[in-house]
Length: 321
Image (cartoon, rainbow, N blue to C red; front, side, top):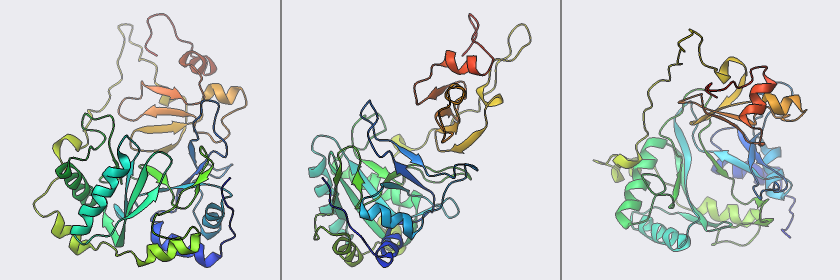
């Protein structure tokens, strides 16, 4: 069982100064689902579906152990991040993180290593928010030079680097990572940074003492570098709906649902089948692929046939779904 705490508002505000770059956040499911997952859901107002804003009260609940939140790396107004987090959960993950930590230290960059359920998270804190694109150039080139595998670019296993995008459009959230010092609801354990006593106050005192990466240093490190070709985002061609020989346009799910949010890969909406059954109160069970909205999926398990039937648009034989 994990320890509970009762941290002060000042401690929560200290945490926010270090880690919070954007006020949107997610909350982890309080208990694992039947399939073992413990997903995060965007914190939203029940009625308006607008994202809730992170504040010291929510952070206190996270640090105390009452809830677990995740944090989005990029602020879309500035395309900057307060930190870089390197997540590793493959065989040899901890050794790879120690290797990266040592090499970063040779550049004069301090990186704080946090335990995780299957490996670790290595955090680089910034003195002022840094351009996400420049952070990614630095870490990707460093990892590949050391032979540390980076997920993507043809590899299924390797480190994941947050921020995962160079920039975000309005309404996009990008990817989030579990906020430090919280309880992982799947393992029911709290994970700590290695170099400090196991209380929120001691951990934050340690993190405040970690040397912060400056923009000037970062620009020096990446001079003449680019993001490796294999990891550059793929620019997808715009999707054009197909017209059948009879002159009718193929079914488009976006003609029938109202989206509630967007990330780099998906639009999210209330699942019509779930709604018909009185479920999906958060209004975001249905994921619709941005680059090709013919592909959609209900994360609560409804089939395409059930979704189409709930919309009064049953799938006909030989009709695209």
